[in-house]
Amino acid sequence: MPATTNPALRTAAVVYNPIKVDLDVLRAAVAEAEQEAGWAPTLWFETTEADPGGGQTKEALKQGAHMVMAAGGDGTVRAVAESLHGTEVPIGLLPSGTGNLLARNLDLTLDHLEESLTSAFSGKSRPIDLGFVEARRPDGSKSRHVFVVMAGVGLDAQMIANTKPELKKRVGWLAYVDAIARSLRGNNKVRLRYSLDGAPARAMRAHTVLIGNCGSLPANILLLPEAAVDDGLFDIVALRPEGFFGWVQIWIKIVWENGVLRRSQVGRKLMSLTREVRTLRYLKGKELIMKLDHPEEFELDGDAFGLAVALKTWVVPGGLLVRIPADYELD
Image (cartoon, rainbow, N blue to C red):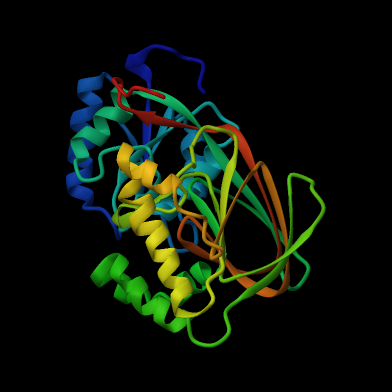
């Protein structure tokens, strides 16, 4: 972070996706919030199709930004977070787009710009874990990325890769229904060998493997009920349904048990009387290595990242600072 501690000289930056924000409204709201908080005029950086926010964040840091606000979807947040890792500069979340997964999992405001800006300019910084993934591509090359919410391989990555961008713009998350239908055609099971925290490798077949830093998805779906954003661990789930009734079991577990029963004391007692289903396998760990039998699509925070033949993921505890409301009570 720049050396000065004088609040009057602190400078924020906004990295924004022009497709997902009303720029005039955003500029006006930021100008009012920065003035009320006693910050200097904000720096502005527009994302592009070629650079979803990483390069813009690095430029903001070069220009002395004390905070970088991400105004866009999950891809913008992920790109900004990647460039902020290793600095003491926090990210401010100005949710827009269809997912807003990190904001959802931190219980932050999703649809009130002024409250989000108050948290950014006048709140406090909370350290959260950051996920890293190194992918080995079919041609032998490697690439490294971060994620703040989830990484996935299998059906969910195929679904994202199959989502039509123009349909998502019109109907948001409903576009994934169309993508799921197309992804389910044919044999889509992933065969892999995995090693968790250095243990001997084991074989697995699954439709989807998800590595979560957070547990909640849109529509209030609690996929990983024990996931915590600051526990230094990944929560991992493998979806392994066999036929229609296997998918029904998964639906009951995720939507009914996690989404309804788990939210009450009576419901949790009822859950304790039920047996775990074979269609879902939960794991916890700090590092997961997967070697895939065939090249498979993988995704990070809801964005497709292409094909991989092996994936190594690990968690960096406290790897990112996020601005939250000043009165936010931490567990």
